[in-house]
Image 1 (cartoon, rainbow, N blue to C red):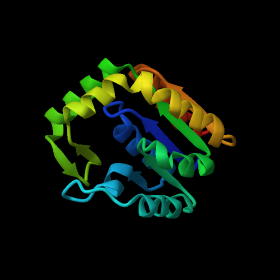
Image 2 (spheres, rainbow, N blue to C red; image 1 turned 90 degrees about the vertical axis):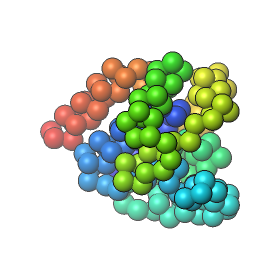
Image 3 (cartoon, helix red, strand yellow; image 1 turned 120 degrees about the vertical axis):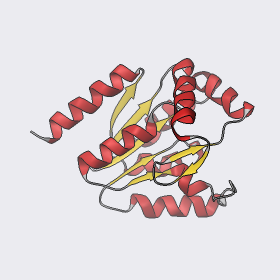
Image 4 (cartoon, rainbow, N blue to C red; image 1 turned 180 degrees about the vertical axis):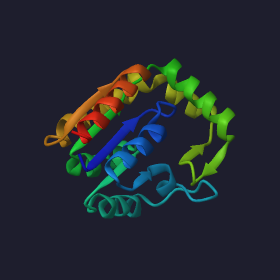
Length: 171
C-alpha cells in the first residue's frame, strides 16, 4: 500500500482519512481541491489539471483525495489501493456542518479544508449517492483493475478500516 486514491462526497471524511493514511505510509497527501482552485476559487484549466495529476501519480508513494470524476481514471489506473467513502447524505451534510464550525469557510492549505458551501453544493451532496456514486463505482470497476478496493458506507467502517490498515502495516 503505497499509492492510495481516496474518493467520496464532500463531508464524507476524505481529508481526515487522507492525513491518517499519509502518516501511515509516510507519503505526501494531495487534496485535489487545493490543486483545482486558486485563492479566488478560480479553476485550473482541464488540461493542466490532468497534467498535474499525471505528475502526482508518477511519484513512488502518495495519497490523493478528491472526487473529480473527469480525471479519476488517472488516479485509479496507478493506485494500488482505492478507498471509496460512500456515506449517506445526512452523514455527509453533518460532516460539512462540523467542518464549517471547526474551520470556518474558505481555503486552508494547512488543514486541507476547502469549504465553499452553496445551495448547488448542498444539493450535490444530498444527491451524490443517486447521481455520482454509480459513476464512481463504474470508474473504479473500469480503471482500478489492479488495486485493492474498499467501499466504506459508515463512519464506523472507516474507523475500522483505518485500524485494520494500521495493524497490517505494522505486521
